Image 1 (cartoon, rainbow, N blue to C red):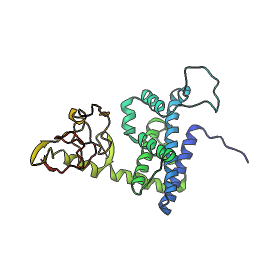
Image 2 (image 1 turned 45 degrees about the vertical axis):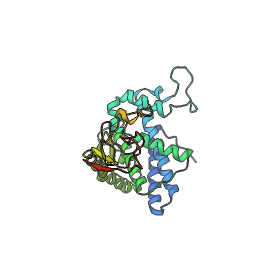
Image 3 (image 1 turned 90 degrees about the vertical axis):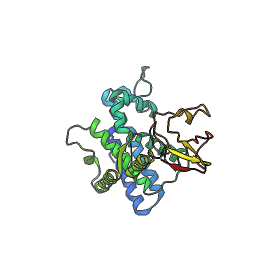
Length: 269
């Protein structure tokens, strides 16, 4: 049997097609094993299209060590995730890269790490929505950075039998997701964040206190360690300066400085 050598982009498309096939199987059977393989394959696809963009800029950029001369072979180690992202930001421009990424590369990496190194529990429809989010990143990145001409859409590189499912994934993402706080989230979450900004005070033991917003010095002064406020809150997705959602594990009590979650409070405007 004649073997076929796949280039880096063909390899990325193959992983993407495999991932959609597993999504179809997961929806048909409800088996978590298929979701696991769907997420692993799409994370491999993302990694490869990022490397393809580096290779397009300069072939040696996909290799981990570009400072020492060594003969290049199929065994030469390629760049790992952190350096891959840093180099893509440099090549493309950080703001343009972030507008396409918006945390989705971290989402893919989180799923891959959980599946490979830890236990994982994948619940429908959350996992379906997350998968739709990731495939949308691949589409945006490919059509902005790698397409050959204005008719070279990602859709054309999908197996014919997977294109209907792809359309459903695109629809799920488009209908349920909005871009807010420099990231993608559901319309429902966006509405909750906006509504919560009007509830600026809380009552503890009959006394009124002003709530501590995300990024306020009072949020970390008790422990002296500040999180990275260039990122949204990991639990409720608010930006620096915004008030946390009710029940967020990051919000601090203005009375004692400890975690607010679990305190008996009443919220007021």
